[in-house]
Length: 193
Length: 91
Image (cartoon, rainbow over the protein chains, first blue to last red):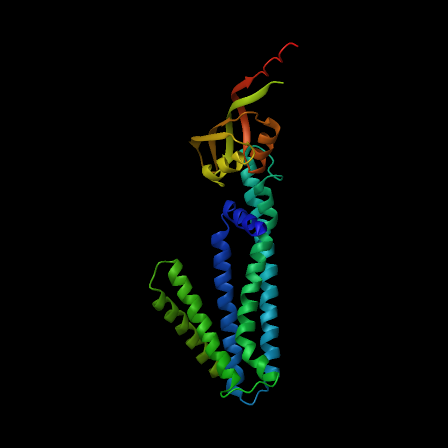
């Protein structure tokens, strides 16, 4: 796992660990709220075939993933390049061949991957009951209801994680995130037929 | 053939990696040797180090490459100790 150690080292020397963690959580939250909105919308309409619901959720998840990858790569490449130029000026030396040069080239890819993978994976996990239902799996409850419950669970977990890393009471942090999700779901029901 | 046993270098490096990681990275290229790092000055983006490397036979080119690779820049060689090879016994 030498490449994993190398990636960790490059994230550390470019002080990018915090950004990577923040992007992962924020975009995971985006994915979960988007899936919640879709699931609540479909649930409100009623009688939506699981295959339709899954296709819409998967499509949204993929779009969120692509958006995450491309936006993060463009912005992080520019930031890393600027940071390297500033460092070269302070060092009065070219640093393209050093670990810092490698970090400037590689770290944007890593952060972009995290930024895109987070909403995609969260979206696919929440949409999983819909996919299973479209493949013939029988559930005792509406698979949309399971997806909604999963969305709330992910939102609570992401909120709780933020609470842990910011040294605040993690339960309250999770509950606060769930309250945001409840408001979102309510707003979606307002616009649903 | 003579060999380098000790060098004292004035090095400029970014804050990251820190002095411990920097010393460990250099030590990886000095077999059986010893590396001592002292931070002598710190500014906004960089820090100056006095690095002492001791070993039986230091490959200076390899040492310089290792320092550059980890982001350091050698500003000066402040001290060197070299030992000459012992003359071979006359037959």
